[in-house]
Length: 442
Image (cartoon, rainbow, N blue to C red; front, side):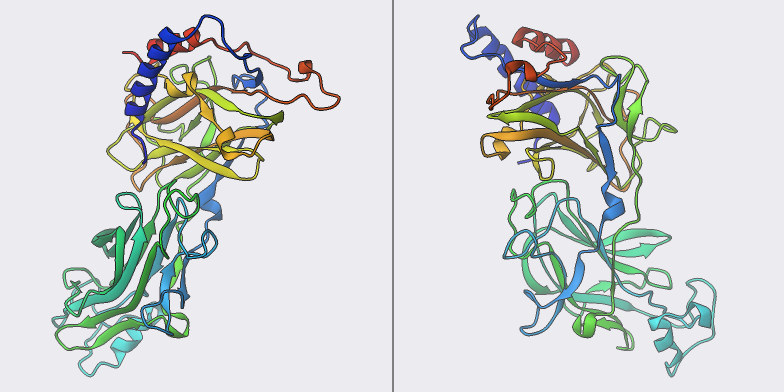
């Protein structure tokens, strides 16, 4: 299950206290060397950032796989790339948009498919600006759908535009076999002309078919027989049965921007003055909306290691009122990154630093066959439509500082122990516990 950050931190601190009291004075095993350390005060060219929204591709497409009608086609937001039975990935934000549906005729240069149909109505009326109508329309939206997505985290929204903002008509998650919502559908008569309708599938940063932590059966969302008709007259204003390629348009949001950067504000930095932060310096209390921003550590050569643990200092100011969070991923080869954990929470003070990354760290060796040679991490900041904030500690979001890797390793032919250069002494258990109680125990 996904974890609430505060609960994880408190549990980690209590566990460390118990283990610290019970631990022997002399360690039974050799102390792992610090392979690499960076306090963000020197050359950080090995760190890289990426805006994943800039490279996103639509996943809605017409497919015969698990279609509504045997031998036919349906719109599917899913893929066969991850599992042979089909599924979906992490951090998807996909839209399937209907053409604008005009209930009244409009100027030629603004015509849509719906407008062309309107011109051939026997009772067509003169143009009027805005949503004012000359006759009573009762447009109804109906469709058949199927969904299979992680309950409580990955959703499909059926939306219509109202005054420039999309509002939800229905929200689906969990498992639902093919269901026709019936001719009553959703009454759209209270919304303006033209009608802008879309299906939107959103998954969070972990637990999907992509990482294998949540296995769906042909997820995340199918839809078919999308129809908008006038209840008063029975006239069909739009119909898409997904045959012949479909009449809707798949899309993804535009690039949200790349916001990970070094800052020199004293409050969020553990070792002054610099730390990593994902946000906009123009307003430090709000992280921009719709982000999916990655921060990569350098990939470090670990000399055929049996294990590797990553440590760092982290301050969180991510309120739990919205679906904003940060995900940690580890790599053993620099190419494939595996989800470790996702966190959210708010310390409410600028010197509150997380205990778990300092004390227990994060084991990336769990993803590797031993021995392995490389180690590194990826931090991904996710924000919702409203962005993240305001932050109780002065700066919203997540601040990262003082990153290091510890590892035992084999000494291969021609290697000496001194080849593993350490730039920082390893923190003792007592020192780590001191950091935890000092910066979190408030």
